Length: 379
Ligand code: NZQ
Ligand code: ZN
Image 1 (spheres, rainbow, N blue to C red):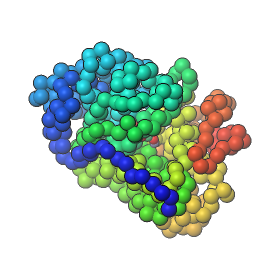
Image 2 (cartoon, rainbow, N blue to C red):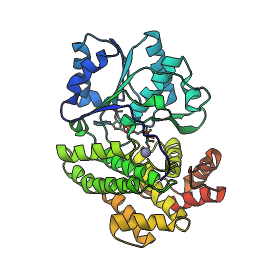
Image 3 (cartoon, rainbow, N blue to C red):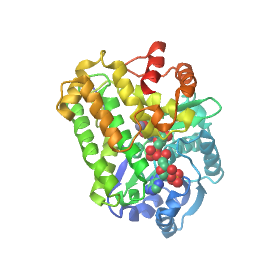
Image 4 (cartoon, helix red, strand yellow):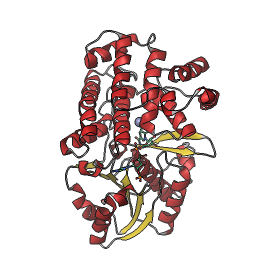
């Protein structure tokens, strides 16, 4: 096991009705609130009204920025930060999935340091402080509610990239599984894939960490059991709760302690697919993971066999990969680019993007030949 420091300052409030404490929690930081949300799902499902009621109960002065899109853009962060700065807000309340919460993290840094958000994302400036962020999670997937990562894209630089900082952890995150009842089946499945992918990125990282490996195995088992059930009964509280907590634990540090690092090569591939074709994050991962495993199978055979053994009771690499593909398919996720109508005509463009951004893992490195091969394997 490698040496490690466990750090996770987010106060996570989980369960039915937890947002009833949102008002008093926001008041700990002040009354000027920047409220961020996406393209309107929270208005349609009533979550917006619940949040506003809480903020009204403390007589908060609320400044809103909405319209943050899936695969969020730095342009929205820039605008949100301008509103926050102009009005000298005390706290940000972000209501949504990963896209909204990630945007809020960088908005907070941008406001506190009067800095261009893309300069932060590119590590060109080192923010020294932030303003408090309260997240109200409405979609189980990314783990952003309890981690220090944020992912944004920029059409001027042709990139979708991640930024990690200890300043990024939300002060508080509110997770009411009922708030995820209205997530449509496609995004529910993408969330299941995403959480599995997060545990695998850790698993295929560097360093022997027995307990962290076991956490990975049980989190995947949880996802494989409750993912299909939640698709059949989207309003089953227990199923939604199990998936929501699994998604948080998949990327809040638990699966990584004792390793030097995770790999994150599959996410790099996925972000480039999302960037080019605006594909939802989880759908890129159900396509990229099988291809990545095929590319690396002769380089890390023991690791894949260990996983297959624990998850599917097989010692065969091929069967392990097939089982993973079969599961993704069973929850209606794409496993090839052709499943999302990306055909041969787009192949060169994708290879060019992979070569230009030099997709790579932190542990398992890619040559240019690998970058081309992985695209072939996804076709
Ligand atoms: O925009 P609205 O109207 O809110 O609709 C959203 C959006 O269309 C909808 N939705 C969210 N909650 C809902 C709902 N619809 C009905 N009922 C609800 N309760 O779902 C759609 C997808 O939302 P989004 O926030 O984009 O999804 P997700 O949570 O999967 O976030 C994806 C983003 O997070 C990044 C991804 O790259 C992607 O940009 N990631 C962030 C990570 C992190 N910060 O740790 C790690 C991940 O690996 C990932 O890269
Ligand atoms: Zn992810």
